Length: 258
Image (cartoon, rainbow, N blue to C red; front, side, top):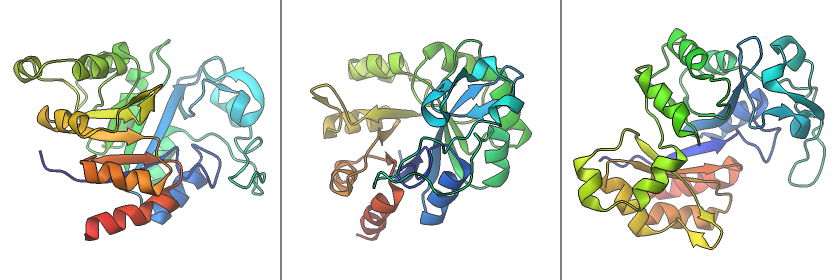
C-alpha cells in the first residue's frame, strides 16, 4: 500500500467559519487542504443537503428536521445564526444557507470529498449516488457512514468509488486476528478512526500497522492540535481530519518536506 498523507478539512474550516457551508469549504481549499469532509441528509423532496445534524436547531436555531422539509424551506434557514468563532465572536458575514451536494460538486470540481451519509431512514443512498454519477465524481468522493446498512446499500448499488468501514465493520476488524482478514478481505478502503473513545487511545502504531496490513487507509478525526497531528503522522497515519486546517496545514507541509 502506497502511503499518501491527506489533510481533510472537517466540515470545512469549521473553527473559522460556520461548519458545512460554502465559505467554510472555500476557506479550507484556500488554505491548501487535500480533501473536504462533510455530512449529508436528505430533504423531503429528495435533495441531498449538507449538514451534520438531522435538524436545523443547533446551526440555524430552527427546530425542524431536514427530512421533513422541502429544500425551499431549508434555504430560508440561516446556517450562520448561532455560530461563534474561537474568540466567541458571532459570524459577521451575511446569512448562509445549507448547501446541497450538487452545489459542492459543482463549485469544487477537482477536490476530494469525504461524504458522511448521516441519514439512514428513509435511505439517501440512491439519490446521493445519482448526484455523484451525474458529476462523474465517483473517483473523488469517498462515502462513509456509521451505519452498516447504509454502506452495504452503497456497495449493492455498485458504487465505483472508495468507501470507509462503517462502525460495526471497523470494530470487528480491530478485534480480528490476521488470518481472518487476510482470508476474507474487507470491502471498505479506509478506517476512519476517532482519536480516542473514553479511556482508549486509537492513535497507536499497532492499530495503524494493522490497517496498512489489511490494505486500509488509517485516517483520524478530529485533530486540532498540531503536536498531536505530527505525532500521528510519524506513527504512520495516512490522514488527519481537522476543524482548524490553518493550524494543521503547516504540519503537513513540514512532514512532506522532511
